[in-house]
Amino acid sequence: MVMTESGDKPTTPELARAAVSADSGRDALPSGTWNLLRDRLRANDPIWLGFHVLNRASAKISRYFDGKARARERAKDLPGVNTREYNRLLWTNYDWSHSGEEWTPTPQWRRSMVDEVMLALMPDQPTALEIGPGGGRWTVELQPRVESLVVADISPRAIELCQERLGAAANVSYLVTDGRSLTGVADGAIDFVWSFDVFLHIAPVDQKGYIAELARVMRPGAVAVIHHPGDGGSMEGWRSAMTAQMFADLVRERGLRVVRQFTAWGSDGRHALPNSGDVITVFDKPA
Image 1: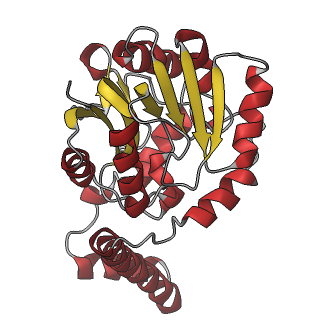
Image 2: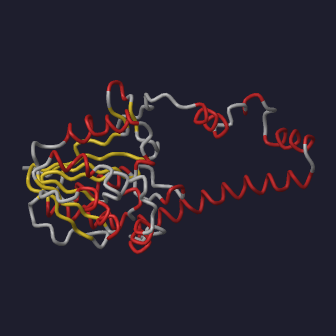
């Protein structure tokens, strides 16, 4: 797995946020917890210090129990916060006025994603499937380059947006899913599967359902490219509890082959996924 930083230069606000979040001046402070607390007490007052300690302690407790909850989701096939009904409501009522481009770091990053990931892995003129198109951010790149395209989403609103955006494109069909299956897609019909910024919010139990369905609809030699959590997720962004290892195991259990998992691409890994906890898994169906 390539673990490199993006080559896109961070902006000044990004650098400032990184400096603050990393506590970059910590090494210059008095060493030891008690010395730190004494220094902060001298500069403030006991009530402020009490609030400060409770805040730091509650953050650690929150992370601990969040980790426990997510481990149980993986072990017991529980959806956690990422229920299918929640996802349907969330993405149906989401403000799609930016078509999902609000999650694109830079135009250069987007171009590299299309040229160096999507097109580099796509077979020639495939029958393709996109899971979770949202506002059509990647659909508009797929549609002109494939023989036919199945666009599948749990949100009827997302399907409507893609229909409006693509107009009367004759090579596209649409499917509203239940959030874990692909009923309506024929066995062995698909050559290429694409899903980006979608499995991030699908519970592991439902990802398991989708992987089983992909094993059914992918024809021998077909390739799938799926972006998903790699570190067990976090409360930030409602990421699901999936891990890179669990995803790879689920793929193999269905007789599919993991080709690679990566977080960065391009010359010297100059482009990377915006969230360091995410991963892209590429897998295929052996011929």
